[in-house]
Length: 193
Image (cartoon, rainbow, N blue to C red; front, side):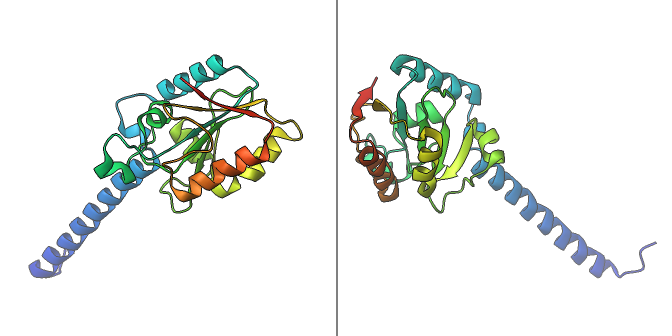
């Protein structure tokens, strides 16, 4: 039998309940932040299928950049929302990320900006349906490792106004894409769909 006073037992129960509530809220927040696409009704495989269709439409030897530009359809909330094309192909609703389909690759690698709620690594890649997740500042290094000495013939970016380098992106994203364009000056840049 518990020999503590009823008042003490009540306080202990109240503290445990509060701790459980905080833990539940933290767990829900963690799951939502870790996997934005999982909170949607669209399965992750659908986004992978869409990227594979994009890959087949542009050809296997093309470096495809899918930047998470800011949406301009709704200017009042565009700083917090990625454009429709990026969301359609990635399922990520916030701007600032970059998905790269390396030549021959259909799933893609995700590059996230510093301070993102998505942390690079295998768990995030599995949770979001990508081959890998990196920091955006690692883009040049990963490009050199993936492409080696071979330069892509074309750089394409999907969407209306999918010109390269990009506009309407967070500064870090615009700078990263600009570096890619400058690294391959002989490559033709184009928009797809």
